[in-house]
Image 1: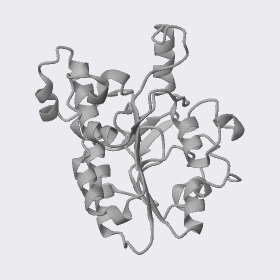
Image 2 (image 1 turned 135 degrees about the vertical axis):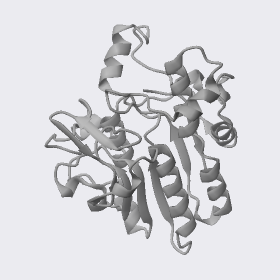
Image 3 (image 1 turned 45 degrees about the vertical axis):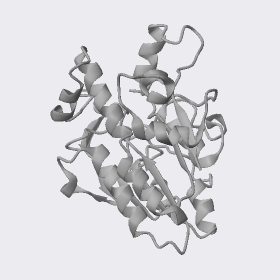
Image 4 (image 1 turned 90 degrees about the horizontal axis):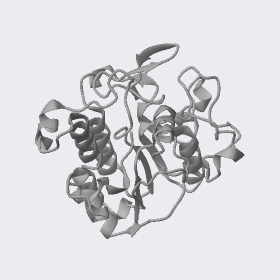
Length: 276
């Protein structure tokens, strides 16, 4: 699942309200022409290394739960560089850069804490991950399963945790917070668009039901007013806010290709902003 170019207000949409992300975009830098790998693990590897995926062996596809590989251990990652400069580093949300041994996990790659999941997708309520050859719970608090979060909507969990981290941080040293929201990424195959019913009802003016669920996921994924307010009240701790859409699955990419969604141009248009 992906947020499209016209799914945000700062590109002219009036169907889905996106006031907070619009405010961030208008007060920062809007990028109208940029290129990125359109699937998950390769693009995340570039974010963490600053390298094209082809230079780290991550260019082919996403990582699956039991796959015996990850972002190569010989690569020094962004949080490891920041650690040398005195930063405290936290990751909230999705990792998806390798989990088949502990060496590939966030806490061994420069992060001090992690609340989120290791694999490619999860159910947004019970936090199970369904990937061949099996399934299991994948909501972690550092190295442990976060059983207490069962039934809580992932997007809300990640936003609340991020606000808590910023508020509790000691401002005497710099903070790096990598917030990798799940929404609007697709969830498990049997329910790829999970959204709370009471929120979906607010979009009853949209005829297509799946589009209504998608609209809710867009709004909740970028309903960052608590997060933004926290940043504004902790400006000395602030470094940079950068936002883009969650990345699509290979299956969706193939579907879009078959449907000639990109008209043979090899790209999909998604919004991007940076606020410093």
